[in-house]
Image (cartoon, rainbow, N blue to C red):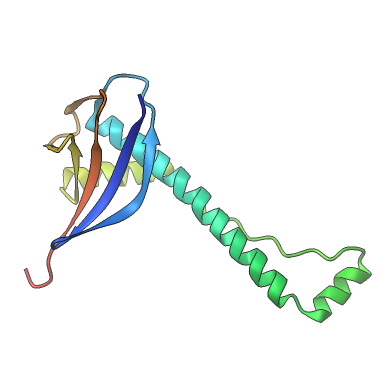
Length: 146
């Protein structure tokens, strides 16, 4: 069964998406909250990495096409080919470090996990994955001044 995890940030009465939704296909119908967080964080990093890389490559292509100088074109032509510069790879995140940060964040209540509208309290709480399961990661932001 495929799960879609949504991540939101609650700022007062507003609810804003924090990260893009990710889909998981767990190998078991029962997961702990810790296992769910591990799978979700790894998938979020993969999705963000692809999205960021594609955005960066697209921006680089447009900028290079627009601003490649005549001098660069002449120099490259004399070397045999005119090439657009390649976008630099974005720094790699350490998935294990980010998973540990997320687990600690859950334990310190920086964010909450809701399964079918029920707030989960502990990393070892069990989640029965069955249709329709809805899962949300909710980041709580304190109101200014209190």
